[in-house]
Image 1 (tube, rainbow, N blue to C red):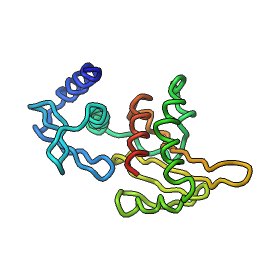
Image 2: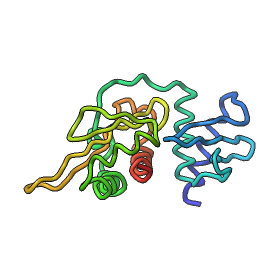
Image 3: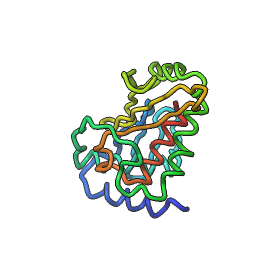
Length: 183
């Protein structure tokens, strides 16, 4: 019920375009079908409806994709560098950064396993880093730093600067949390 208004607005915006009844969107390595007739986002692998917060994210991405995704800027920015993040930093850290540190803090090399599961590649950044294609045209740079005797391990998720023209801040928090939970 809490997501009903956001879902309705997203579906209404999509209905302004002439689209086929079913449209497929790939999110991480999962494919979802948008069923306009039933107004549902369905997992292609299981045939079950996506959770509301995932549906909203996919619908917002679909709107941006149909309108035309912005070109990648090739400039990585942290969540804190995005406009309008006031009040969201703690949620971003709790949902996205802390789970990554918990999972990979003692073994950063473990994140390389995602290269087999997701559209991702290793890059030369931090102590260890991978770029994960969350959606087509929406890369996320996951960075890991090993801990030492002075500081504990640290992680971050950086985004191409263009993300702020695709998603609102709330969506970026959800996106980062989904990335952290799936990797």
